[in-house]
Amino acid sequence: MKREVIKDWMTYDPIVIRPSTTLPEAHRLMKEYSIRRLPVVENDKLVGMVTLGDVRGAEPSGATALSIWEINYLISKLRVEEIMTPDPVVVSEEAMVGEAAHLMLKYKISGLPVVDAEGILVGIITESDIFRMVVHDWLKEAEPS
Image (tube, rainbow, N blue to C red; front, side, top):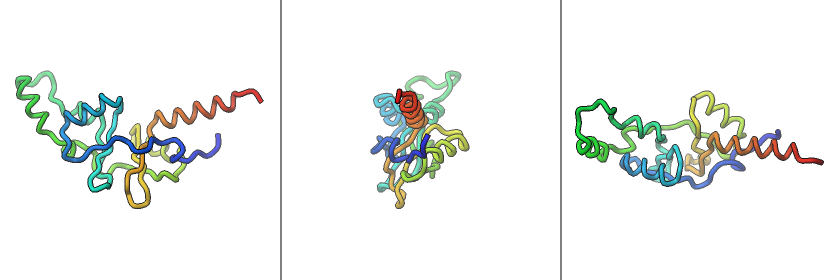
């Protein structure tokens, strides 16, 4: 397998949200686009990351004494900035895919925001992107000569 560059496998122009986005809106976007993470951007700069696990973790347990209306009201007031991971681990689009994979394993995360030299979000690379690259290379190697 040759040395692969992140920019060749990442997803460009990912769906993003602002810190002031409500949790229900973040959850709706994740469901609508079948994604598990959203970069949080303010003034074109990456300021955080929110995952489906973060959103679900902010919901109260079923053992609460609150009514469904109270729960929905409270959740509707929560903002992404209250639950996001600030200053997430990032990677450059010029870095090798192996570096992204190493960072994902090291920090036990399934995706990384990809930023340019100014810290502007340009994409995202996920475990699925890396797996797609591996499968592509395997299939290429398996082709008859």
